[in-house]
Image (cartoon, rainbow, N blue to C red; front, side, top):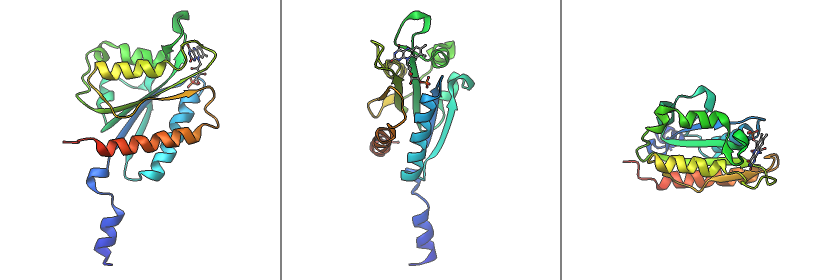
Length: 175
Ligand SMILES: Cc1cc2nc3c(=O)[nH]c(=O)nc-3n(C[C@H](O)[C@H](O)[C@H](O)COP(=O)(O)O)c2cc1C
């Protein structure tokens, strides 16, 4: 095989080069742990993807438009003593005036929500994130991943979901 052919094989086809933009909110580090585990596994199965991850408190609503695929991840809180809410940092980001009018314009999106089985509204952050994406015209390409209780030991579930995300992105019409 010629060197040219080898080089062509080494570089992923342009259509496989995706920019994944992850915005996450984490308090004790559980969501960040899941995000790290996901990125680790995606870097192995999709070396062609450019992955950027950032915490919600450093993001502005227009930043949600970056990348080809948007992934929102948040733990669930009882903000204001009401269970089943978004992590406060994610809440602030998505309730900013600019976020309220943001048009995701069909952008492929996915969500991760964390929670604890001892709460009645378990991991409801995932539902809030999905709702935001639907209302703002994003395209949910996989069902949300819910991680209940400590994420340590749940890495395989994260890996399996990551593979589903990659497969779903291949089915997306990118025109
Ligand atoms: C103050 C507080 C409120 C919480 N409220 C809920 C809740 O309403 N529903 C739920 O499923 N989990 C709730 N949890 C559990 C967290 O969502 C869970 O521990 C999660 O893994 C934390 O992730 P993080 O460290 O990334 O913030 C709450 C935790 C805390 C500390």
